[in-house]
Length: 321
Image (cartoon, rainbow, N blue to C red; front, side, top):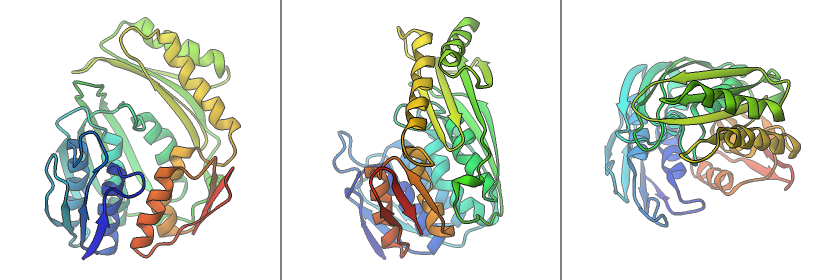
């Protein structure tokens, strides 16, 4: 059984999500200890438990320690199969992060998942970034993935629902040049007056005047706003909050993208982290503004499963396998 120190490197939930996905993909039983040991609330949170369960259901795994607050997890994978899964985080925990753990396993034989929780969460990709940047790049490399946002979920009430269907897929060597040069702005609101989404979109458009605009207004359990903007393999997002002008939300997202586009590298810093499992499995090469702590943590974890990622340069950083 492979022993993994959950506190090494970045020391967050990424270690758990990536480790269980690699365990399923390689058939390697694992024990993760000291999970999130350096965090204010150490151990597994609801979102991490949901990600582990998603992977476990996709590979008929046996596990112990998958409960909120647990500092140790034992995960023993079985055979990967085609499954239809439905899970509820139970909080506004990030649906995109649950999907990131499940997706590489699901692409082996195909399957579907419906997850309830948060679609727009601090310190997590928005569901629109997940779809328009991350999934778009994987599709350009041969992945069969369909994403349906059935409901949006904002902190603290959550209530978002996302359905993803994946087909058996062979992923080509990672090369960001495969991704079409698509770009856009999506301004989203829930349980708020129509003008809020329009003001967010107008502010983002003032910074990015030639970008196509989509406005998504909804009603649901939670109240909130978000703006996501993207151009090819780079994206940016901003979340609203009470008292924050809609114009600032739109402008923050757009200026974030301008900064990402001005930075060196083919992909943004966050996408660089998210692609590492696929780079390890399929090979390829890409550049990013820097090798983040998240990325270096993932590279070290991949090496424990026998997948070496070469990282060179500083600005840009080059990732290759």
